[in-house]
Image 1 (spheres, helix red, strand yellow):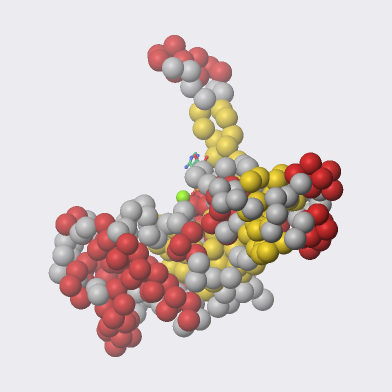
Image 2 (spheres, rainbow, N blue to C red):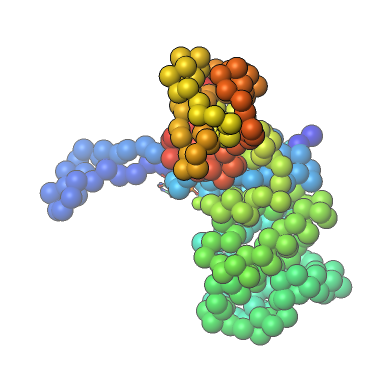
Length: 334
Ligand SMILES: Nc1ncnc2c1ncn2[C@@H]1O[C@H](COP(=O)(O)OP(=O)(O)O)[C@@H](O)[C@H]1O
Ligand SMILES: [Mg+2]
């Protein structure tokens, strides 16, 4: 049984559609116009215990809403969520012990308390015994250097300190499932590295982690499974490497030739490919669609037209592909 399971998960936000000014407000009273925003649209997602999953998508795609639905903070408009087979609202108390959530954009620490006291409050809420609590704090200290920020009052924390303390707060009760929503947002590189290392240690201990991020560097080296959401719908769920095969049709073959390429003949032999001359003489870049022709075919055609000295095929990087998926530049091939 998967530890996290969502079926047909849908969240519609209803917003009043007011015209501007007083007139608009008065009209609204009578007309009661609303517009519905489908933030999460029939999402099916199944996560196995111990799995690490990256959940990415452009701004406003529905990532945070999904996290709120999966943690029971929001009730779905339709569809359902199960955590270990339990219902996040009906079994709220049991489920609360099993999940931990971090929202990078907001804190769950008490603003007027030192971090140590915020954590102690959470320890008491969750009934964590003191020995276990001390062990967990020691571990947080090891990777997050929590010790130095324990005495600091919530509102005096720098962003990096706040995130480290919030990570500890999300994990005080030793949840089996952790949702990290933009956990590195606004952090400087050194702190990013440290929290990334911490995510890896969580994963290595067998905690199920769903990581939402804008920063693709958070994802690389962290998980193999990538889920991409766009406009509330899941448009990719699979291997991180597979995203290139799914979306990126384009390949570039760089060739070096002994004599100039007869460009007209090449264009005639490779219809659809785009041949560019590179800065250095006798070097060319041939851009082609790998669903139309293979790199092998391109090389073979070129080799019959002139002598090849060297060649190399470039495929786009994962970052590049995902960025272009976000921008709508790459869509699923039919
Ligand atoms: N409480 C809300 N009321 C109305 N609309 C909302 C609310 N929360 C989110 N939305 C809208 O739902 C969409 C998805 O938001 P969100 O899940 O926060 O996206 P992401 O985290 O991927 O940036 C956005 O268009 C956002 O404006
Ligand atoms: Mg968000």
